[in-house]
Length: 176
Image (cartoon, rainbow, N blue to C red; front, side, top):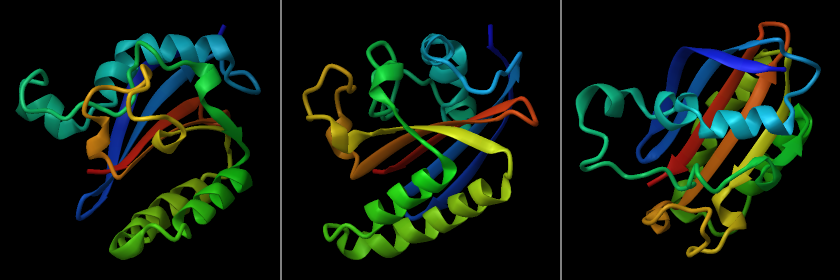
C-alpha cells in the first residue's frame, strides 16, 4: 500500500490575486501510479486539510477566524471527481483554459503564474500521473464545494507524483 508519510515543503507563486501553493510530500511505497484509495485517504488526512493551507495562515492566524475556506469540501470530494492527465495533457488543458474568451484583464496575470508553474512541471522529468479538479466543473451550490466558493474567479486543484523522488505535490491554484 502507498502512504503519504511527511510534509516536505511549500512553495508559492503569486501575482496580484492569482495564487499558487505547491505543497510537497514524501510517499512510501510509491507504485507506478497513485490509486483511488491513496488519494481518498490523503484528502481525508491532515496532510491535505492542514499542511496544504498557505503557510501564512498556519503561522499567523487562527484558521477558524477571518480565513477564506478552500473551494472544495474535503469531506465530499473524492478520487472520482478528479480527471486524469498525462503531463502533456495537463499542459494542453491549462493552455486551452488560459485562452478562454472570458478572461478579460486577468488573462495576462493568469498566464504569468502559469508560466512559473509550467516551468516547474516541465523541469521535473519524473512528474507523472496528474489529477485535476476544476471549480468550473461544479455548480455553485454543489455539496462538494465549501460555502463562499463563489468568491473565487477560478480554483484548480492538481495532484501529481514523482516516482523517482517518492514525492507527491498538491497544487492549489486560485484567484480570489
